[in-house]
Image (cartoon, rainbow, N blue to C red; front, side):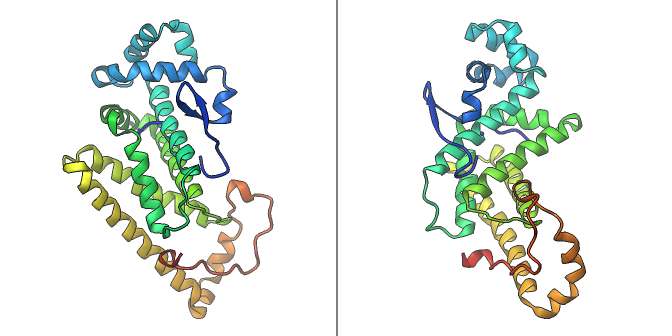
Length: 262
């Protein structure tokens, strides 16, 4: 799925370059500025030609960039442009959230705020988002699409203060990926005033997720249920997120509190 743009508190930093928020990684990327210029020049053409080779050619012409450089910046043409557009929005969200105090919000409120802001950051480019979603829905780009949405979910959970160091790190991002993707699809067809229907849809999806998380917390807090699920827990204990690999898992981790209580 494509929306457009790019990390979590303490992971990414905000840098001003021609009015754009950029990460340290981008600032060290010699093609970063060229990619940004091409994306900006491409947006008026995406409406008509989608994320395509034609759009890349026209963007290069408008930006005064040699086509050879444009093709080096986006080797796969349109799909790489769509993915870069998505990452750039993720980066802008991360930079914004790094400056936002979410501590007074409950978990569900933090997640809802982050998802909403991610969509609002690309609201003026809805046609580009729609074209990207259509392109990345093709089976050949399934992996690229999944990775892009996963990255967005990771940015959001990181900003929300997630400290999971076990399989929950994966399940939270997988579930949020579904919430985010479905909300974007709903938003693309939403004609309600100020997207009120989309935000109501988002609230319902998050409520569904919170119910699942509450159930998990209740099961973990029940000694009989924990004993019954001990073999499964032992198997899952070896699953570690990237940042926790090499660390020794706790022998009997304490259950997480219900999300609505935090």
